[in-house]
Image 1 (tube, rainbow, N blue to C red):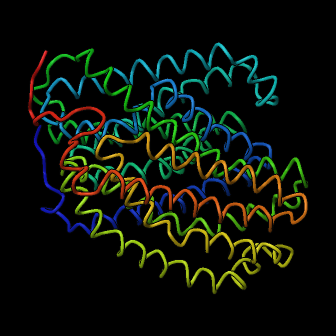
Image 2: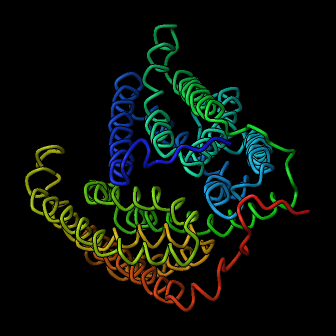
Length: 438
């Protein structure tokens, strides 16, 4: 497989800025898409659009055993020279995506009864194809990430949101409306994104000189993916469990205030997410000892950059939130500022998460996320009934801080020089690149 070093085309910081830019552009595209759907279909169609962006992806990742989170480690790490890997990853994606789509189709009547009550059964069945397309797109993105093509991965991050816009326009011009337009638009967007992503991989020689897939490799990918997947699910719960508890304990009006506050504050998370995404394959390629040294150098810089990002957002929250959302959202200002304080260490977490993934220890990241989830549940139950959105914000700030401090403690435990030198690859075992066994 032909590999082009990221440094040949862009500096390390250029790639990081490219990832941040791709995420911001994707967010803008999603905002425009949501406005288009709202203007042409109303709140109910927007709700279905939101569900269909989340549920098929979640089901696909679960059934494929966390493949999108595992692919980059194997492509960049100690298995990168094994030419059985490309077809092994593709096979897991096809099987997992197909199985997930079949489960969706089998559950279509239940989905219609509880989640998609306004959709005809035929549309719910058609939406099941999105489980397959989301896995294929996510796998292509991870393969680009792990095969030294972070610019290509950044393009997928952008196009997977942007492609809905031309798809929506074409289908609207063809006469489709309402729920049919949303379902067909999502599938067409995924198809276009997948073709672009996999075409780039093929042109870069991803499948060159490949060998048939290997069952033992598939087992290792699945084990790693399951460890990483637990943390991903916990992170999702940690991010949105407070929404559910606020709705149950207070009501939709308070939830609306808190949703605006959290979305504003979470803008600062883009930097940490980009750090993890860019550093993860770099750390996998470095090996534990070099990765630990690199992470130690990056952590202070990440902390400073995050703090610099938090400060202006904290200051402008007081006039930006009411200016954008209206004066009725002034109660969201203080919760947003509290959450921002809790995210002041997020850059540290981004570096450590990339390090733990890169050395084959994603389970430790899952443990740290579990600490944050425990803090969220306990403090939400204690504070929301009395303080509403403000209590939820305090709980989120404490949870973010607790999870990050736990990650840092894991880093100093696993990443200390003696530990790294003595253990090598702690979970999956160290193999020289290109090793062919079994």
